[in-house]
Length: 593
Image 1: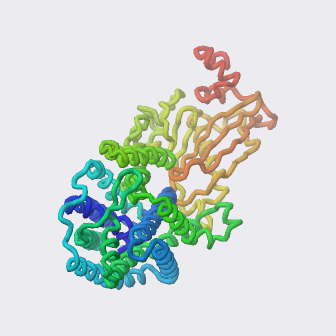
Image 2: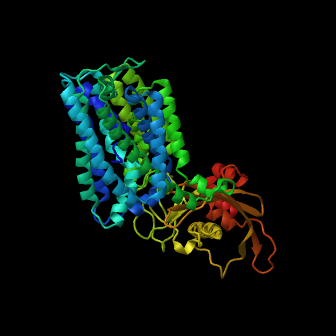
Image 3: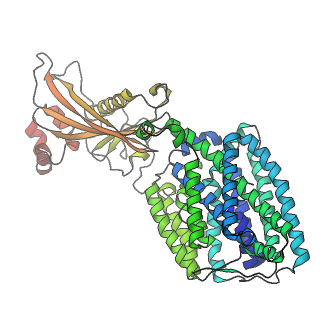
């Protein structure tokens, strides 16, 4: 029932009347297939949806919230705008508000298991009301003889966006994630549940299509872009015919669809926001109570505001649906790629910028109408997912076992290490070896475990400095493999250390620590470092100052020549030594010696 929101309920009325049964099937079958594939993939033996969602909820929380705002907003807008012929615009707005308040109360008071029982009760009541309205219409008016538009250019252009949007749609629906986690936790079969659920959902869409065609001839809605809407036809016929009982039955059926959407949305939003808020270290929580931030009410208030604006502007429903086939497809494709095991880079800003361009193409194509632009918009929206699913040309191949450098033909740890820089790579998070060079940066890749965390579950602050120290020692060892502490004439001491914390990391979150020589004078060398998370980007950065002292007297020394020779390829290019390296590379080693 929670999948029968405004898009499914009212748009099925439109496509059945505008494009006939073939148009309804072109809309309903991708819907059914998307729901089935979601359950089939997540229901694979050995796959734990709860663990998957725990890794996805951080980077994709914004996507989940936007989709819930859009889903509830479309449902409220369609409910008010297309049932107005029965109860008036103000009356339907009041009923929608009441339904939303009841849904929030239900979502707050009951668990997901209780909601399942409630939805099981909603279904026969809603079906009975729909069948009653259907029988009344069949006895009062002849069915629609032919589709009002047929296979028009708009219909042909919408085929590809419908396919893309409905196949990816369930992956962005927070309610579906909550349900699949609960099914697995309760010991049920995810695959069987979603197979049966998708068939039931198809049946509900076909029932609505039957209702629409049984309404017979009815005036369509005309919009400013020249398009025609058939979503309100059933309400118009019932309202004009004076069949109060049938009108009430149809409104009850639509109210149940809205109620089951909104209470499920409230439950799933509370599920997500409570987890995200409890794990967050944002300074905002020091000002705003965590319970308020985690409340779904502010998200649903945004959805109600979106619906009110759309009703006031007389906006066609298709433009509220368009983000599911354009704006959200790039992030959704990245999410699916993560589920399937891809470790590429997710750039939400890039995805949404490209998605906005795709949304504009969709609007131009629908208003045109220009079928080619409509079809192109769905493909453009997917471009943002390319960094996730396509291998980076600069990405190195997996290094052989027990190597210490990332370049081709790296030597074993026991062999001498060449001082020439390895081929630079552009994405440090994708380094395949444990440590090595990324241009002038030395990079160490690691995965924190529970040993690195505190009682709260985030990485203990002092461990960031420990990681930088470890990266520094590996950097030193790789550049000066023959350094012997027992025979050295100098010690390398840490003069100062500074680190700027940006955000926290958690266990099992892939981390890359980068370090390089930033500057120097005669006696001191400054190293700068960065700590990156594969999931959340920059965690922090800082610097440290090194000094060199005599092993016997502990008197400060100038930078030893062996240090300059060992770190020769990675010395700052703008420094005096760096310039000499560029100008006199062939003779520099002899000059230093």
